[in-house]
Image (cartoon, rainbow over all chains, first blue to last red):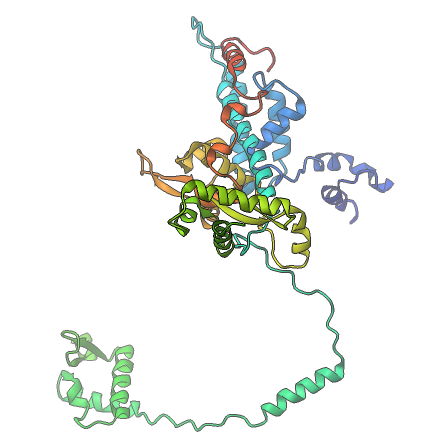
Amino acid sequence: MTVAPAAPVTEQIYGVRGMRAPDRSSRDEVSESATFVVDLPEFSGPLDLLLSLIRDEQVDIYDIPIARVAEQFLARVSGMPIDAAAEYLEMAARLVRIKAQLLLPGPEGIEAWEDPRAELVRRLLEYQQVREVVDVLERLSDERRNRFSRTYTPISVQPAEPDERPLATSLADLFSAVDRVLRQARRPLVHDVIPRALDVDGAMTAIRTVLTVRARGCWSDVVMRDAEPWQILSVFLALLELAKRGEVRLAQRKPFAAVEFTDETISETP
Amino acid sequence: MKPLAKLLEAALFASARPVPNEALGQLDPESSAAAVAAALDEIREHYNSDGHGMELVTVGDGWQILTRPEYTEAIERAQLAARPQRLSAAALETLAIIAYRQPIGRAEIEEIRGVGAGAILKSLQERGLADVVGRGEGMGRPLLYGTTPVFLEHFALRHLGELPRADELAVALRPAQGNQQAAEQAARQPPRSV
């Protein structure tokens, strides 16, 4: 029914096998595979995981039983999300390849047999050295962390935790606070909005009129010499509006030169 | 304390970072390097014998007054100062590789660790623990990374030579003379168990 599929999930999270209810015992094979789910953030990479397997299995690093280690390795990786597993999968592929090379007979007549595992061993030893240095660095940094300099320069300090206690506020306090705020805001800031005194439609008519007489007009044809700002703005917006509608084409020979407009409808319908 | 010792103490107190030997020597042009060294000894002795909450330690190329570790917990509990965050294992591994192999490119770091190093290098750079020290030869002239003075400060090292030498690391897995021969021997013989 509905309880059974939940069992492996619980085990993934808590790893508790003894607490299984008797009626779920039929799901044994599912929970077996669930035990492969291992949280891997404890490993900093495929070499770390491989080293820990070699240590756990107590095998000689110079004579790694590849099949056994590869099997263990894949078992650990199988539960990882694919994007986190990429680097581990590359190592798994490498292990399988080494195993294949070990099984294949080498070319005849060649005396020196090179162990396909040699490169892996070299990398593992190198990585092991890094881990040893990390232990030293970790100890040193812990020692240093335990001392403060006079003005400690925060390299990366976690922000202080906010106070998690519930607020000790009564309803009356809250109301009086609201009242205080409202009393302050009782006189709203009033200012007059001047209506837009632009006459875009009028300017558009003026431009259209100019264009019925000739095919080309320029800025000074529609803007009077002593035009008010609202008139200039009206013409400007009207030109943009007409250009947007495809009625006129706007052009300017060079920066700050007079704007010219041509009748777009004429050129489109010759 | 002698006047010079007091002067040095004041300077060390005023500075947030370790004060290099050279800067300490410039505080009083009259005093010789030996006199400065003696004065530093005097301060350190003063702190140790009179039972102070601080001590004088040498960090990187300089000196710094630090609180004694036994008071750290109380100071942190009172939220007067906070210890810096611990570095992640990945960051420590990357730093270890840089410290021993510098100048080193990203590709080599990734080769040794078996995982991508881009994000970690960026965060180490942001923390000032590692930085670009040059460009390598070859394809794309890769950026080369090295450790910084902040690195020495973070690990309370005087110089990189205080880190264990490669041949001082654990014998078990080190390719020492005997092991190396064994490895070479193993490499020439078919495996015993696969």
